[in-house]
Length: 154
Image 1 (cartoon, one colour):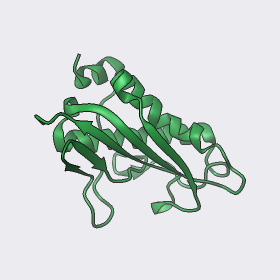
Image 2 (cartoon, one colour; image 1 turned 180 degrees about the horizontal axis):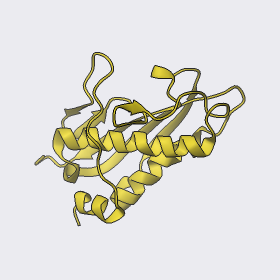
Image 3 (cartoon, one colour; image 1 turned 180 degrees about the vertical axis):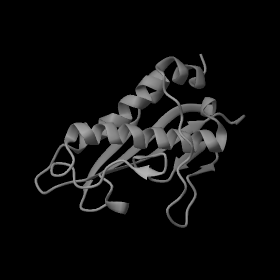
């Protein structure tokens, strides 16, 4: 089954690529690796939430926002090489705008990690960092970037 078929089976539609907010591209390839820019939880051109996780945003809300950010990362990969070219999710880096004392960053970024497992199965198992930060662009609660290995034929 192709990755696109798997997305359809899961009822997931890849969104349009989020336009860069500054001087960068959504994804770039070197060799068989595709690196995405950090992706915010944007849908239909709108940031879906603002604020700090553990204050204005609950951990549960942030986990769903991380999933949406992960979906935006997949859209960036798809626009560059096609989602079916993905061989493996290599690394996920998640940033969580954290209220003082909030230490649940890994649980938040599980929103993206679980998405990649659903879509890619064993090929979605990856190394990861989940980092608490004081601020993110546009006061976003989460940001996710990924590195994927792609087929040399892509």
